[in-house]
Every structure is written in C-alpha cells, then in structure tokens.
Length: 426
Image (tube, rainbow, N blue to C red; front, side, top):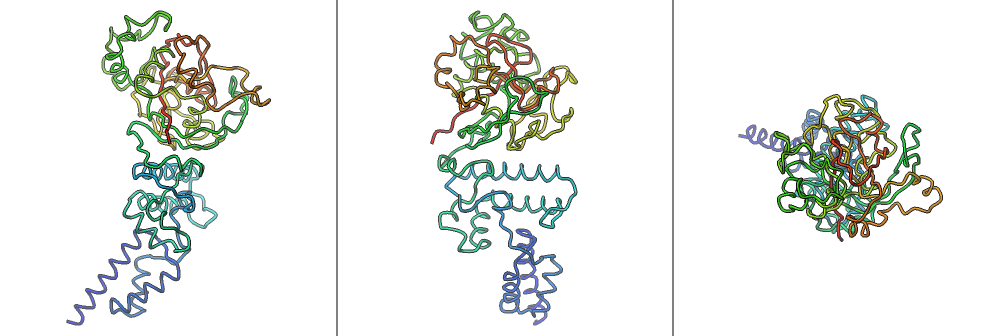
C-alpha cells in the first residue's frame, strides 16, 4: 500500500512539473527551492527524488522569464483593452519577433539562446498571453508582486508597435474581422535609395494616429455589392467626368469577370474608389497610413517583408500575367496582405513631386493634410492622386514600400485597385 501511495504522489508531482514545463522551460533558483519543498511536504518525496524528476523533465534553472519582455511589452504601460484587441496585439507582436528570428538564421543570440530556442519561447509567450485565463494566472504566479499592479492583472498586453499615449484611446476596441489595427506612433517614412523615383527620396519621421486598414484589397465581389446599392456608379451609369472610358472594362454590364469574385477589383478610378469607401463607412488611406501599414514595423527595409524580393513573396513583373486572388502571398508582420504587387492602390493624397523639398524646409504637414476637405469635396478634385504598392505588371522597383506612383483621378487602368482604412474614435 505504501508503495502504491508513493507512486501516485510521484505521478501527481510529475504532472505539476509537466504543466510548469509547458508554461516555461526555465525556473528561478527560488522557484526550484519551492518545488523541492512542495515535493517533500505535499508529495512525500525525498529531495533527491524530486531533484531527479526536475532533471528528467528538463526544467532548467535560469533567469526568470517575463513573457511581456519576450514579446516587447512593458507591463508598466498596460492599459485596459478588450479581449479581441489583446489577442490581435499579441499576435502582431509575436509575428514580428518570430519573423525577425527566422531571418536571423541559426546564429546564437546575445542571451545565449539559439534562434530555435528563442522561437520556442516566443510561442510560449504568445500562447500564454493571448489566453485570458492563462494570462491572469501567469501574472499572478510568474511576476514578482512589486512589478505589477491590480489593474495590470485584469489586462496584460501592450502592442510592440504603439506609443504609450495611443493605448489610452483603445479601451474596448473591437477590431473588425476584415481589418487590422495599426496603432499610433512614429515611423521612418521614405527612402534614401537613389533608385527609388519621386517624392520619397528622403527619410523622415512621421507620426500617424491609430487606424484600421483592410487586410486585403477590395475584391470584385465586394465592389459588386456596392454597385447593387449605388446604381449611379454602375458601368453604364457612371458620369463621364469620373472615369476615362475604361471603367470596369472587363465586366459584363454589372457582373465581374467569371471566376474572379476574390480577385481585387481593377479598372476603377480614384473617384469610384472614394465613393465605395464612403458607402462602406471608411475612406482611402493617406500616403503615410499606407506606408506605415505596408512596412509592418520594419523601418529602413525595402519591401514589406525585408530587403529581398522574389516571386514567392508577391505577384509582379508579369510572371503570372494577371491579378491573383487576395491573400495568396504571405502577409507582412502586421498581418496585412498584398501591400506589394498584385494591384496598385489608390491613396487619398494629392501627388506632390516636390514633397521631399517641402519636408526639408518644414513646410509640409505630413499627417493627413486636408482629409476632411478631400472627403467632402472629392467629386470636384482634378489633381493627380498617389498610387502605392506596384502591381502584377510592374517592375520590381515599384514594389518598394517607399515608391510613389501617381495618376489623374479619372484613370482606370487594368492594375489599379484600392483598399480602405477607418479611423479609431476614442
């Protein structure tokens, strides 16, 4: 009987250690002493037996792991977010750091971990902090009492790509399923690359307020829904001043090309894109919003994913010869798809070839200049508008996140599409 009881208690202790090992591969020396005490007092094991179990379960003694620091959070900055926002932000932070680790290859990190070990830790941090119950338990059991407050136990997540000031505007934010939350903050916009044409030959710091952006470009199916409710924008009804004669030229009346409901809509003018965005309760992105979302948190990188380009990352250069369905290529670290290639995307801004000169002299408001005026008066606007991202037919250089194209607002080319954004109202 005594042997049976001992085995049962031993198994109970092993279960405790297995659960602990799943949460973290390392423990502090203080935690190890506490576990040995529990083994003796609660499970009737000797110190030697308990130590052997810890060794067999590969539960190593090391520095105390702070999952918030692993994902780039500061627990001191935690404010109240609803559960959907917390999950979204944890995923974004994890995706960015995991991608950085993959790009690092097999090197040894400064902390002594291999990149593979670091990715395991990142996964553990993500799985713990995105689950409300695990997150609360982790905060109360893993972090020292002096490092947390009562309010932080109830919340527990700060996004890696936002400023502290932005957090207070995000209480109870619900992130739409088809959009991504981009949090307020500064980023490095533009490029010093002499091979990049136009107004972006300059790197400058831009502050952008929090906003949502569509995960994907607007599709044919989505645009058809707009036409059904807005007959004045249908192919046979659109006013001649809002297009160049090729509006929806591949459509059969108000039916998109067969078999392409999930392809980005093309042959749409800037006016038509503006009208769709207004109907859906959104707007076109400013040039700064577009570039911040496209960079995915990677400042000074050439493309949304890094510095290298190939046909596994984007649809460009006529390799396929046409658009592809949305989401067929990997997203960037913010979880936004098709920011390079597939279709050019209209932006809200007027194209200004002298933008870099005005920035150098401080005479240009980079933060959404004239949004309200543009939205209220867009049918009367005649100046060229910004296009970003390149397309399935574009040369590689146009896919660079800093590359800026432009066209008259009436132009309806076979690779011009768009996506929308929406402001987050505090």
